[in-house]
Image (cartoon, rainbow, N blue to C red; front, side):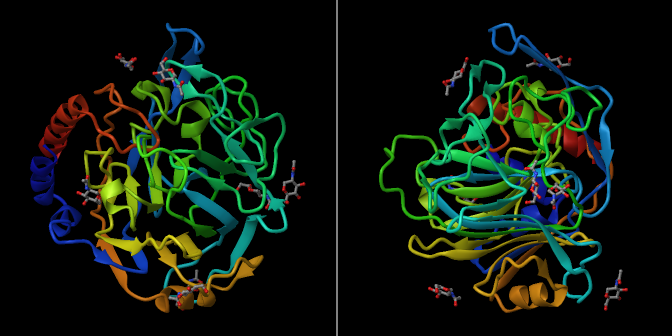
Length: 392
Ligand SMILES: *[C@@H]1O[C@H](CO)[C@@H](O)[C@H](O)[C@H]1NC(C)=O
Ligand SMILES: *[C@@H]1O[C@H](CO)[C@@H](O)[C@H](O)[C@H]1NC(C)=O
Ligand SMILES: *[C@@H]1O[C@H](CO)[C@@H](O)[C@H](O)[C@H]1NC(C)=O
Ligand SMILES: *[C@@H]1O[C@H](CO)[C@@H](O)[C@H](O)[C@H]1NC(C)=O
Ligand SMILES: *[C@@H]1O[C@H](CO)[C@@H](O)[C@H](O)[C@H]1NC(C)=O
Ligand SMILES: *[C@@H]1O[C@H](CO)[C@@H](O)[C@H](O)[C@H]1NC(C)=O
Ligand SMILES: *[C@@H]1O[C@H](CO)[C@@H](O)[C@H](O)[C@H]1NC(C)=O
């Protein structure tokens, strides 16, 4: 099914064609022309979330977006899955950085340093709250281990190692106003610690991290030895990151996910991929579009690097030992980290206007991040692809 899908896609999207050749090892994974004119649907209501009769409704009036980095130009939250140790994190914005030019100084507006326990504008959350048949588990503050619930915002213990399939996320420290359609954070799940994500069309996230081999979790668990770091439109986790009901978050309708460093399956546990999940040149949001290259995962390495989104539609994932986490970073320094990093693999995204929003046409898994497609979903995908091909 997937092969058929890719073959069809290759006729309309250059990246699909390129994926026919083997992925290459690289140090820099770049999307060009990232951002398009499209739309997505926000959640308008969540009802009876703690009962089996719970329901979710998307707004019928779509959010329209356009321009470089869209839809990731809105607020995003930052997500981590084990096995992983995060030793540094920083979020930056710049008024006008364009990759390869020297303008656009970066300003840091969030910072975490594990060794000193420093957090500036960082809130650690995890899904350790009540379960709901619609929404999955609720967000709570993360405790020092990253995965248990805490009553208050808490800093992770130094060098916290989370296991396979365990996750936490980072939001800013700015609390959301009241939940409600049209409010600052839109509709969110009752009772969660609701925080704003990180804003900015031209933004950057830097990380220092390790992705060691899983040493304690059972190999039976989901996502065994498959660490990842990724971004979500911050609306997604505030309603439902993992839900079987597509109406419970804006993910299915294409509000945005960007996988920065992701192991996609256990057979390729040493390959870190970069993938976009939206509708820019694909109808298959589950599969998304991946740069046809990977960064090698060395179990013993400490990586420094991150992702930068410039004002011209370049989204660049890189690893470089030159990376620093200073309060300001000169555009020319960032350019030299990237150009000095090593081999680069680039994927040119197709130009798309008003891609179809498929939010109303399916009830597929609406996970913010998912790997295990089930066969019934695959059938639905083919339907969705047919639709897209007709439109194109
Ligand atoms: C950024 O630098 C480039 C090359 O030096 C220049 O062409 C461009 O006008 C500059 N952009 C801004 C907004 O200053
Ligand atoms: C949020 O973080 C900033 C930067 O560290 C800090 O100045 C501010 O006091 C924090 N606000 C809250 C509500 O914790
Ligand atoms: C949450 O509830 C759903 C269905 O109500 C169930 O399928 C799922 O396994 C539960 N998740 C957890 C972590 O208990
Ligand atoms: C914290 O991050 C938020 C979201 O990006 C931003 O609006 C705010 O200005 C930041 N706070 C500081 C002190 O930089
Ligand atoms: C999602 O909403 C649409 C439109 O209201 C509705 O037709 C569909 O049944 C809903 N899906 C689920 C799984 O509730
Ligand atoms: C693992 O992921 C890679 C990269 O997406 C893909 O090429 C490969 O087919 C996948 N392998 C399996 C067994 O799913
Ligand atoms: C980066 O630094 C690490 C740790 O010092 C080292 O093992 C690795 O070889 C360096 N990578 C490169 C490309 O220089």
